[in-house]
Length: 304
Image (tube, rainbow, N blue to C red; front, side, top):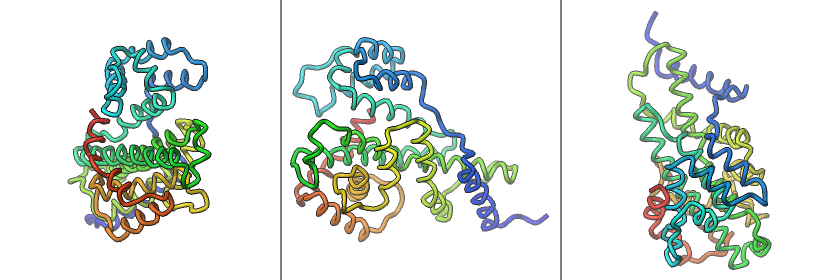
């Protein structure tokens, strides 16, 4: 039997992966147990701060990260939080909920395969950048009362929904990458010669990752607003400027502009997306520059 050509091999792998997506035959990651219990507790408006702190303390690494987050640069003027309880009280339910999803999402971007691992780390950095920018955009228009932001002042969930949607907008990509690798090994019963990212493989990931990401968001029972924002962030909705999906689309372009991205992109396309977003949110050039300034440093602090 002759050697299977790359085009035929790719076609078979593509068919196998797409069939799994269509039939919902996806081995989706689950929320880690401590994070899941914290999210369950946070779903109750009258949750006990002490009970939540005790849950977090069951995971020393998570506890350390919660204290670090409570003492991040954005809160530098406050007296340092010295315990998990103090940190929980400072962060509040919405930001803690986002943090728990962040803790749950991070392992998805890791891999034992070296190429996927490099790809995943870069994607995670980009995703955190988009999340921070998207939340910043929604908060800015909320404070300014522009772009339909006046209805956001009632303490609703828009900023954290934008953060989570930004964090998860590309989460299907590492899952797709792992599925492609698994499909190749299963279909051809060989360990991959060298698992690189040809343009055709990247094109398949770009083509299908959103459906995988949505399946994951649904399986984690994320709020409908977050799921809709992940689903709709490929296009601007000019009829609803304050929609978090718009903030994610805009933030994705800003992250590219700020040099926090994976792969190639069309600079003219990014400029166009930034131009439309700036008008949609009534932002100035100075606003854009301020959002991008120090982006990499803010991301690194969040990842620390």
